[in-house]
Image (cartoon, rainbow, N blue to C red; front, side, top):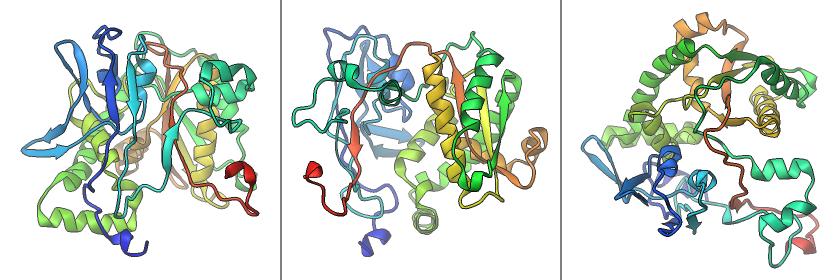
Length: 340
């Protein structure tokens, strides 16, 4: 495994999901194309299909479905099927998870469809399994302040190391300000993306070095998403959502303040779902840390720095649906028979 850390860091070879659409059900609405975070779908003769190659300037890349299930969750006709999984067979980004399957909390040998399983779950389990990241919003309907407050309150009661509450929330419902933030973020992301997508020797060497220092930022799926939101017409960093909540972490927090920021964000998103709102993590907002102008305008100063953000709004179309997810490695000590 030690040597694997240094191999195939730049655009590693990958296997992709098998993506199909039922032509008898599909109406050609295009919602799946609009929501795909990596711009991997396209309409051809009013029927969606997965691109096999991805062009960025003069460069062409082999691409395919990575199995995020965004398209599956927004399809109003249940016309999309995804099988297999995205998998990197070797190198630094070698996949360590097991093949995906739908929720099976009772470890049944023949898992029931979720519609049958749902009645045996708690309300919290239903929310967790059905909540999806939403990228299609009703842009004309703002989230009322009283609902935003309920979301923030749920975040306030999240656990944090030493009960330090090492974060603050910055709620933005001003479209002009959201657009201004986007204008600052996009050039930063484009520069970062350009380094990754280049095919020259210096690009590969620099990506290799950056991948050893911060592997979380050099995954090819991340850069497909960056290219989509930072370059393509109609796409936008905050997905045209009416409300953005920046989560700024207090660097003095006990233990890892970034973990606490993630926990409070998850509390907020689950609560938003329970209130009928849509939400999505927007990690690209960390680029604001490199903009003096926006930090001053948003009053982000030491000890705070942007750790993440979430967007809120009313969904353009309902996307509550249980999906398949990879199984992470699970080890029991002592070995548990239920996991055999």
